[in-house]
Length: 90
Image (tube, rainbow, N blue to C red):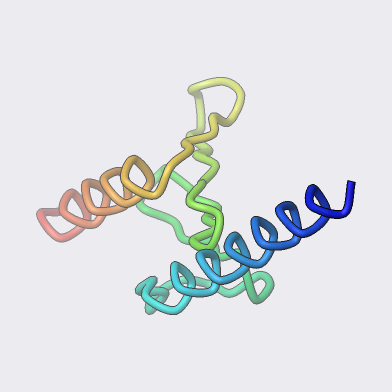
């Protein structure tokens, strides 16, 4: 059973390192810092709550019902890039 503890410990450490790397490389300029790991920004009627270390965000849009979650660093970054482009285009 000791081997399993070592394996899970190594997995836990790898996850911590990965999340720290993702947070470090995230561009959080222009975002409101809620906690060290949680950021918020408005893009017109859309509010995004973003956890860059975990690769997820929650999208709130007035009149569109319940908020939705977006999972995965790639999908989250694509959504944020799309909203930034729309914002810059006016």
